[in-house]
Length: 147
Image (cartoon, rainbow, N blue to C red):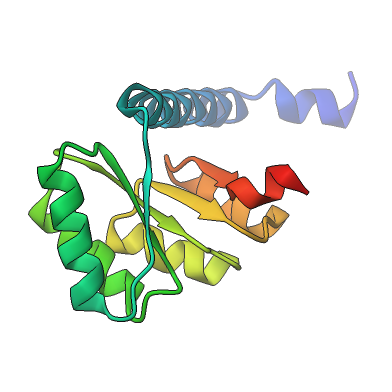
């Protein structure tokens, strides 16, 4: 038996492998649920605003109008604070995403603020890997499909 086979057949490896598989399955289910809710809502309102208060007011109006999914773009000043505020205010009432995410650092900030999905106008493998560490779906911005 090769050394590689001995390592892989150890109980510790088998245990850690099954935990990793279970963790991946849970993350996949969470991602599928979020994507399913986005599809069921039929609409994602993309919010761009000149200041955080304006963005929050637009989001509140969208929520009152029945919009089920909102994307706060990182072109909004202090977008992470807007996401955090809305995540607390509308917890479980709407899906809240972050848009115009250009790098993994911004993706991380958005996720920590409460974003449930991430949209990137400049998709990168690093950002995708980061989002995959959390149960957060990520996708390229719509304009990317047109190119």
